[in-house]
Image (cartoon, rainbow, N blue to C red; front, side):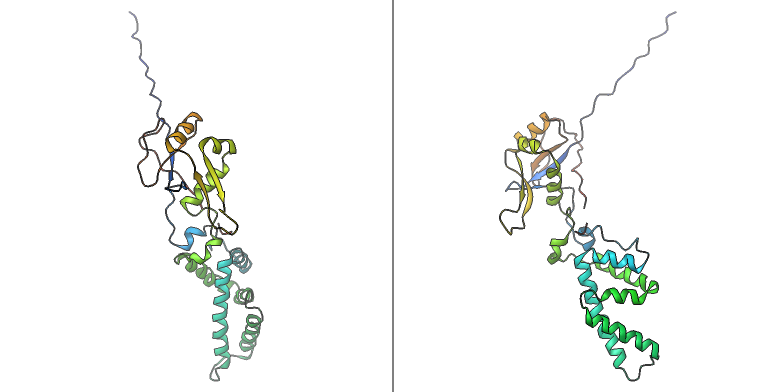
Length: 243
């Protein structure tokens, strides 16, 4: 009696999920998966108080980020005003040594308004470290100050994420797609971006021919019906560090 033959089936190959980059009316490319930032922590992702274990760690972390260092200078100025009030209070019960320490700190803060806060942090020592870490976290949790934009992470928006992605592509691939990198439209310009200069459909055909895993679509519109696209294609991924 012949054994029955076992049938084997091979699962059909599934379409490769594609990342879609959006093209606005001027051709600027954006990654729609990168949500618009709202807090400082969204645009200063390399700043964190979590791994600061000493006052030296904290000073180094703050000094790395100019807007945060400016903030600490302002906080130190406020602390100087408090110290001056304490020293001027004739009814204060400050001891001689405490008064001397505060007078020394006040002199340091007056003498160097920009980095005098270093002395303040060192003066408070490890006992004050937790409070300073809270000040950093409070700053990160605050709303974005757009006046600090020059110091934002290299990748903090859909446009900057696209710029980084396409900048990393080989120049020959960008040329074939019709993508150009704009590094300032003119001297002093703050505009930086990747732009698609050609037709979206043609660029998508080229991307398919080159075996690329991304395509283009008009901004705010659903993904076009392009060959190789998965019905549940993710939009793409972006990342975002204080310069």
